[in-house]
Length: 333
Image (cartoon, rainbow, N blue to C red; front, side):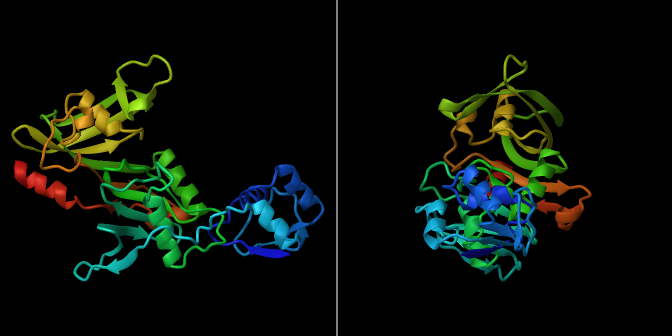
């Protein structure tokens, strides 16, 4: 027999969906049979499976330890087994809380009970591409484990809500639990969150512009192409920008991302003749002074929010330009 107490990380989901995650080797028929026979009960009462779980609810499982282990899967990896070592520190000059991972400093820009925003450094993946990769997902999990905000019994993992390319740094929004993940994802999907980027481009664009078109993916080459016209299943994209400053043959732009597609900003600006400095993949000249292209997720701005996102209502979360970006600006001025 085993009791599971639902935490804030897990509330908000249906009982049957929770059980399918918990017993990953069990079929739906078996789980519903266990519910009917009261081998699985919710708060000491018979349950149908469609009940919404709340923090503090108790799921009682009347099975042997061996049966529980079997249906959970012998190779289950607990979230309580961190793959990496991090240190949590506070900057003595700025009082900025940050995570130290290898040579990376990852500032915590905002945090509450449900959500957290990081300043992701360029060079770290948002999500794993291969099994052994370390990404911001693992760093987020490790941080929440180390601060006691999640434990090995959590079924619903935390997750990121705004994916950035490996070499794009800046504001990264994450949900610490199911409620935060759902609320933040919905706000971004409904475009209640405005996302702004800074980049340095080759060439001098007009002072302001609204770009639209259709994005075509080339999966084999991990690249996208832009078309002015729609032919089949291309995704519509819209990108807005304004010029912040100009130099001899380059410009500093602020880009507002209206739709969020793979490589959208990089490909769209290159298509219009203004590739991002250092972005050789999309036509920029090679530059020995740059380790990667200069695109930075500069800020996100929220409108009026209530409930779970009330902590960021009408707030702006900003990530200062990284040192390499600032140094290149000084060089071209």
